[in-house]
Amino acid sequence: MKQSLKLADIIAVGFMLFAFFLGAGNIIFPPIAGQMAGEHVFGAMSGFLITAVGLPLLTIIAIGVSGGSWQHLTRDLPPKVAMIMAILMFVIIGPAFAAPRTGLVAYEMAAKPFIGADASQFSLTLFSIAFFSIAMFFAWSQGKLIDTIGKFLTPALFIGLIVLAIAVFVNPQGEIVAATGKYVDSPITTGFFEGYNTMDTFGALMFGILIIDALKSKGITEHKATTKYLTIAGLIAASGLAFVYISLFYLGATSSAVAAGADNGGAILTVYTHALFGTSGQTVLSVIVLIACLTTAIGLISACADYFSSICKVTYKSWVIIVGVACAVVANVGLTQLITLSVPVLFLLYPVAIALVVLAFIRKMMPNPQLAYRVVISVATCFAILDAAKVAGADMSAFSMLPMFDHGMAWVIPTFASMIIVRFVGKKEDELVAENA
Image (cartoon, rainbow, N blue to C red; front, side, top):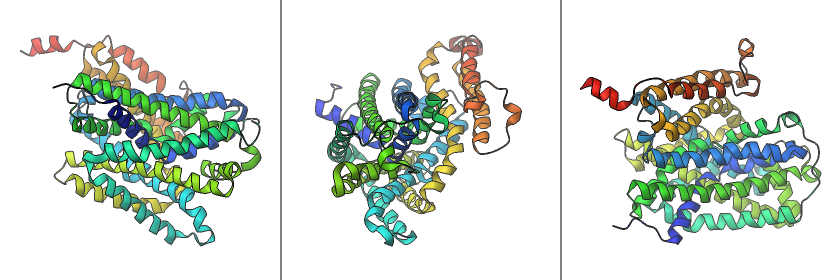
């Protein structure tokens, strides 16, 4: 059987992945980062692109290289450890943080401006119920995701983004001004951490599996072909994300004249779009945000339901309902509170996810992969706990002597040093097998 896809299907798969990624965080964080970075916008944007585009792309490829599933990616870790890691990541991108955030951003930017003074907690509750009911409806038919999202919703989303991007570059609404905050002294590292907020590296671990399911539905089952098309889909999605981020960073950098004092990217986008398109601008922005948040919510709910149904007897469709309802409930916490709560968790889990992705590419170089994975993940986790505790406000001055600790990256040097060490430690798998025979 020939393992190939039509060009239209390849593009649809790539657009599907792009739509899954492009959600709430991808829209609200770049504009405020661009405004604060000001004259240092290029450095801040570069750091942001590393964690918000580069890492998700590498993660998608790593899934294909390792075998196409979470189990393959973590096969050298103890099964219970791998399951705990997966559950934590699915909870974060699912009902705890990322998925509810899609509903909150959709409400704040696509519904609240039209509700006006009548906006209340009750209106947020009603919107959350409606939004996640629609997301559950689309996630219900798992096998049709590629056609629903890749061929219909994403093109509409992308057209809207292209119109906005062209308008921003052709008619910027102000001059780029001086940098503020942490962007004055360390724009690259600040942008790097800002990219954490998109949660797309976690999303890539889960979305990659959905893309593989979509490829199987199209008849692609061989490992080599799956990896090939997964990589192509990743490149398409990464290109789309980079286009969006560059546009939104430039929008933010030129927004001081029209959106001075704005405290979040959503407010900047709203004011800037109104300045570009007049009263019809809010409608254009609302459509873009609503579609972007909805497609991501669909992908997140589907990914969570797919995984949780694989580790217990509860069915996929039952999990769609459970996760969707949980998202609607959590969404009523409020956007600011949700972002504040998520930051320490991201500082804890991102280093672990990054280490896991890097290990997937260098696994064949390790004489003892089991030892390598267990040592490296343990080291990454231990030092990530220190960074997370510091971000959470704990007194961590005793650890200030650690390299890069002040930048929130105490995990980097120990983690990569441990990768080098385990490259030369332990016996090869075939030697261990021979000894145990």
